[in-house]
Image (cartoon, rainbow, N blue to C red; front, side):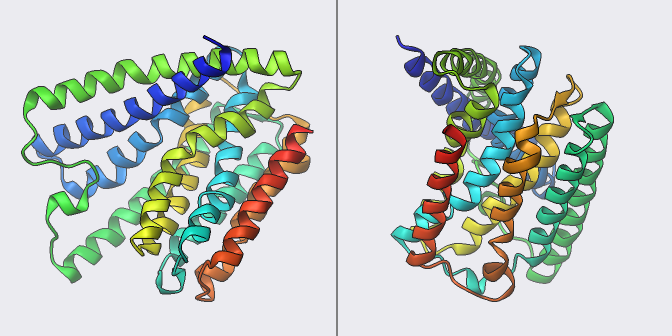
Length: 316
């Protein structure tokens, strides 16, 4: 098999294993009495970010920190420009009716904090603790808001609240999903990182460039699939919330946890270009979040074209 095929196989294994881990962990937690609200805010959120986390940890352990940082920065840029752009071409995202101001402000604060720490030249153990502390505060605030909302709206059914919940799932399936997830994630990450590094050497590009493009695009596929379905079902709040939540977790959780494994030096290109593109892409959402503007087909074309232009510049 070619390195491209092996890298693709690694990505497929990662995505399937991440989905299996979420299903297994959600149903195990609910079976042993963990509240559905806590499961939604922690296990599901971390589980869906597991592929990016395993890739970043594996990359740092193999001496390829540029790939880890590129994966996070590239994924955040792709999440806004491509993950919202492509679905908007298929069906207008009616974001004018969404209430995402608070979480969006959190995402911008997380982005600014991330960039500020990057200018120290290296994401260290202490940088990671700062990012994880910010994550803990945001999770606490989200839990508090969700509790208030639940009291106001009355409790919803567990299976409607938590992604992957199945009240009738037998124990053997829960254990099978957990095993598949725990075995598949490191296997897929190893395959993808190994072959991505070979591709980088063959084409004379850096690990950071591979992280910003190939790996970032691959790990954004679940978000893209979710957003396409949300757009077709006219669930703009799901689409926008998915992107904002994923970006916050990428910045705070993935880099925060990875720096506990090893430091992540920040290459000059990130400081002069890529981080600012990521922030600029995030700021593009202001009209849709604050001024009740829908993401129509014209916006979809512009966002998608902006992403293609960014990837072209990175690869040149």
